[in-house]
Length: 294
View 1 (cartoon, helix red, strand yellow):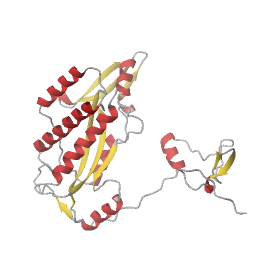
View 2 (cartoon, one colour):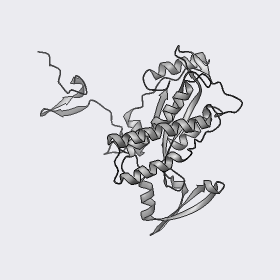
View 3 (cartoon, one colour):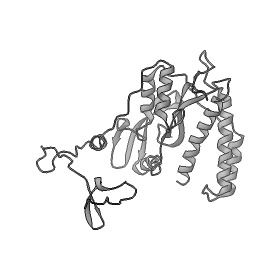
């Protein structure tokens, strides 16, 4: 499937442009909110259904660095839904046409592509908006559903035989009823592989006052103004712990006796025909060796 990186990126850009533009309007916030965006590519039946979930703060930071609360209340959405739909659609289609003009989008049949654009341009686009979360616990629970899960988790798979795989899914078109779907091995794999992201693609992105540069200082200032607890400092997780979380294996266990623990003494690399201690390197980008004292 071609154009995945380009089109997934456009989903993020369109959502962030829409939310940040509306947030600048004094009728809604008049400031820059914090946004967490997460790419989700599948539905319950494993079909290809790419979309972006966005969590938006109920307020934002003004140009003067002052917290501004959202204007709309009484259960209303942060921004008018129809405004979000029109702006998102306009941004997405205009940039899609730009990609076609500049040759950034790969396609085989230009006439068919133009026909699709004509059809979607005439349709009303829908934005799904939810009521505000109750608190941090609800946000963490919501994020956990989409951040690090694969297209289907093991507990939904009911049976596997020589030909078919059966799994549970929720049919949103039929009152969210739990149903069972059976697919051949080939069809199951075809659907599953659609959700493997391009190498290096970032599926969780932050924008607004949560963008990466000086993010922690802005978050600390928001907490100070809202009289919230000071953010916890970042924790450096050792590589050995990361590997254990990912693989379930403790790489520090001695491979011979399986009892003792290995300890890092020093790290060596093979450079210019000899082993060099990495502590002698000037920097990671340019492996030049420091001059040894005479």
